[in-house]
Image 1 (cartoon, helix red, strand yellow):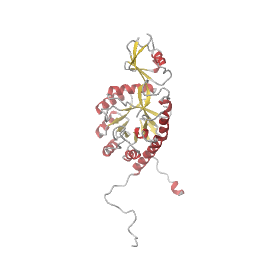
Image 2: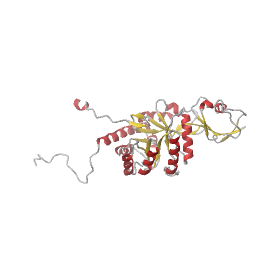
Image 3: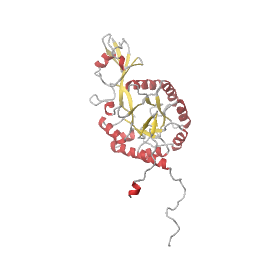
Image 4: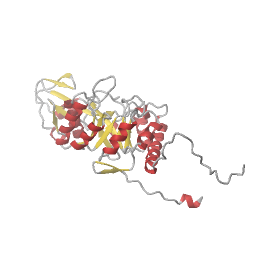
Length: 269
Length: 66
């Protein structure tokens, strides 16, 4: 027992985004929690180092008695990733990023998402491409929410996006990874980190994303809307680690028929 | 003068600066960003930036989102 516990597995190279290294491959959102305290505890439990936030008018979206989100999720402890959620045009997304950069003292890492329609919150890829180009020209480091189209994903990488973030399923749907083959194709062709953004419903979904070779997963609703978000955040942390380990280990090939695990030789019956 | 702040009309004394506005909104010292007529006004310029009648001002902060 002692001998095996001393076994050292070769260390994984950590996730690197825009020149910065992260130990955690789980990125989390801050929406839909009961209150600021639950938000803080869930994020701590998730072990996430990159935390996404929305940018909104000051008179909206916050109880005046509650502490400011950035007091709970401090930019000195976390990498804050402002998002352009709610933007339906490239123009609005670019404006939002510029406000976010001012808000965060010149911090230029952003999560670009330009939505196409309310029902599916599917990304509008033509507007996303326009916004990405403008933001990159302006010096932003763009992590881009996109459809799971391998060609568009490559195009976004070639434009200079620092991470490609295809959806696994519609935002907040919890349906899990709907097209594993596309995610796999995107991962295999990419030279920048690929993270599944949106669609994860439970821990096994996150593990599947990691087993496909994704560099990380970004999620919000799966944790925030769980019965016990703090516990689910922990489950997600473990799921991401398990999936990553399984990917590095390399799974056995799938076979149609059985293959006995115990030897046939030496049977006495 | 009338200034539009976060979509609502607000009466401000002429010569009011962004710093004046932020104080009036009870947001002094908070982490926020300001845009006037769709252009960012850096925090360092809030005390000197004088608003004009009809300006459209956005005052934003970070809130929970995914």
